[in-house]
Image 1: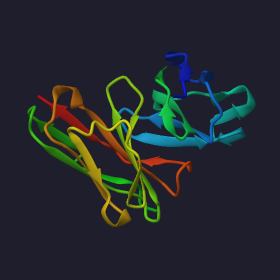
Image 2 (image 1 turned 90 degrees about the vertical axis):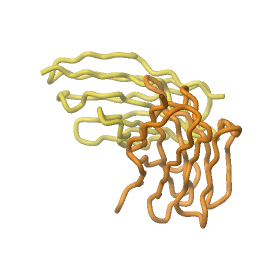
Image 3 (image 1 turned 135 degrees about the vertical axis):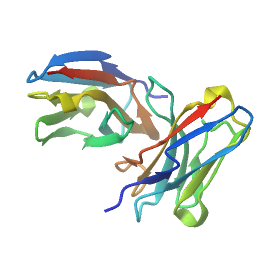
Image 4 (image 1 turned 180 degrees about the vertical axis):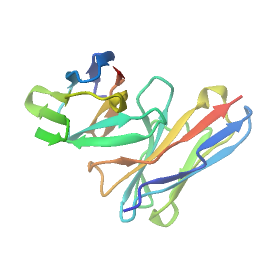
Length: 106
Length: 113
């Protein structure tokens, strides 16, 4: 099946810092989603982004489908950004990466 | 618009017992999914329904897990009998059609003792 690799596995930030999370995938995909899993386990949709660039407030994402990667940018991080960020791609079915655990310290 | 609903939110059972989870998808969504998320890992697809038909159940342990989606709306996932390794969060998701954006419910946290 398709391989989805996320980096880094863990990220510790000081409040106000910027960061970039990366997602690499091993085959062509129908779509790509970024999720934030909060401490209560709820998966929150961030972006549905099979290609191109999207922005939502302090978050933005870019997917370069031809090169099989996607980037999630967090700017001016806040403590509420803490949690696990998952990249998931659809290649016949939705396959998740292992996630990046982000901790934002005040 | 109401999101994906799941119940119960938490369940504790002993091994070899049975358990059932319920999911109601977003209204109008034809595709419904059940995922298993083990602590520290990403969710893994167990079964996908398109309306009331099964599209993919290749990773469903069919000797103990079963799922149905009667009338193409809500769905139940059952485990019988449960094993210790079934301890996980069970997530339900829905989308308008296959390959569309998926939306997840709050999940059911199962602990098997």
